[in-house]
Image (cartoon, rainbow, N blue to C red):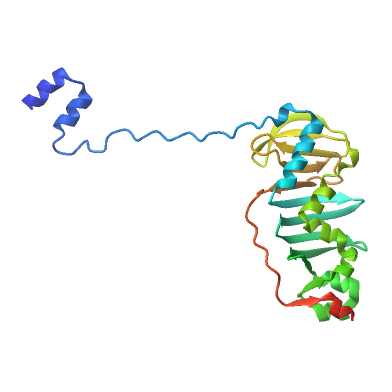
Length: 248
């Protein structure tokens, strides 16, 4: 105690504790290391550009993406459509709910290896009657190339490039810049047009994050663009019927 008391008179208490802590009571009492603060994503400068430049940049960025998850609801010429698709360069899978003859049908889609497959028992019943529905059941149907035009509304949504042309054509729509905000947890710049409102990421790659109508027919109509460039694993389905064989 005498030695420790002398040391305490000459040095700071923290040094004394280290020199005299022979019983280990203060072991581990040092403050834990400070946690690193996550670095916020850097601004990509897109918000400083004109509205036309931002839309063009977002289209170009979408064109270079290897994959994207597209989810939401929209209306086209009075038809209400819901999509939940994972589109990739090497394949697409997901679902589309779309109307036919006044009724809506859920259709599962797979596009892979330059082949297009559909599964929708209720749709086949509506198209081909009970005989077709009983024959096909819940199996996948391979759509042959010669019949692809009959199903092009579905097929073009399952192709990344065709989807981009369809969704971001905008028909010469003129956009004006709105405010910056946050959508789906991502900082974005708002662009307002006569028919559409788009939100483009202001950090990282300037991807489209959300697309919605300027005057939606129903509340909540919008398309989200999620998980850009995530790995996509699409394989051809089993238990498949070839539509060409059914027609022969």
